[in-house]
Image (tube, rainbow, N blue to C red):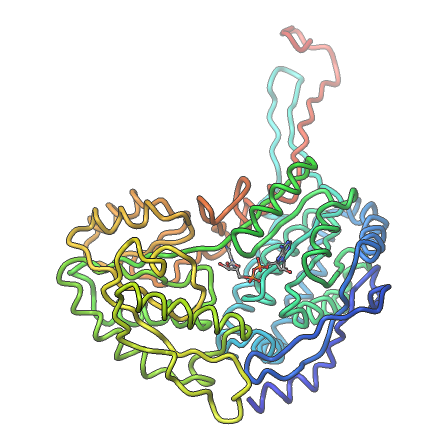
Length: 495
Ligand code: NAD
């Protein structure tokens, strides 16, 4: 924890709104406190912005937009390239800050930052990969595509990836020519401030990347603001659904990613080492607070022999060293209650995270050890509801089709992974899974750019995906231009 403290002191993070390139408090002077998941101690505060603050930020963004939209793409990506270099140079400092405010281990924080940088890399490559297209559609008549930005656009992000999820959005939105406003999670707003400082240092003109801090009221004011043309959202399903309805009712473009209940299916022929590591990393990584984390382990027939090995490996994890903390006390209480309920409903708690002690000096933090519930039945709440913590519910079935039926009937559709040494089984499962992202022997099947990220069913509201080429479509319009300069002999309906 010492490294975290030192990096935090050094970072001098300003917990303010970023408006037109200037750091500003909320007009009301109200603030929201940010607390360390590791210790419960206060880390700082950020403005609790209301509609007037949102209006100030949106007006500054709109003022910056026209010159940026008129800047050629090749020039627009240069500050993003420099930003990427700055983040890479300071990745340890940033990962300490992410860890400090989100409860992740520094290594997990670093992994997320590097994944976010892959989106920046994709955005920087757009002049090479997104050249549009032109075709002579008749003699002397050409049709061509021209990609155009939308104007001022907004991103609203969750607590569990303070740097990476914002980086899913702003690099592409900025590269295609928009002014971007970020409303980070009020639980982890400080890393986003650091990103804002570095974008300015990289030479991004003021007003193109803005920050407006706050909670529900701030989000609603942002979505409703007439200058905001499109909204990207990542968070829980209830809020994703509400934000999507609100934005689309106003005629705005919206892509809202929601919660998840991911299934990991283990076939009897699975490789033991690959499976045990894949499953344990998936349900305990980031203390289970990942929308791609394993939540339900479906063991098929003799694959039940893996459960003991998974428990054995998970109980070796050390809180505060190899596994981080939960985001806040209410998450810990919610998860403890969910484990109590599962036990009452008849599940066996074969690894009990409720009894694991907090690391030394971190008694005020939000700790829960890895938990494995065995003998879970499909209608128990732990098999259906998103828990978002280091809790694995194990369901035993006899066939791959029974395993698939569990995933297919889930409300959510983010991820399914299958562990098998059979190509035929892998293909059978991948073809029938209803989730948007499928893994074969991969516990956390996050697609890497340029492959886009996005689920199905209640894990996503709106069309397309968040990153990769789909992200380009989300944050821009394609104008179609048809041109003729002279009369040509082959007259048709266009002549
Ligand atoms: P959350 O929905 O509580 O908050 C997300 C954002 O919405 C925050 O910025 C928050 O301030 C804002 N918000 C909260 N309540 C709101 C309301 N009533 N109206 C408008 N805005 C509101 O989510 P969280 O707890 O920060 O994050 C965890 C959730 O995010 C989990 O459900 C997880 O599965 C999901 N998630 C999904 C993905 C994905 O790609 N599908 C990725 C990461 C996290």
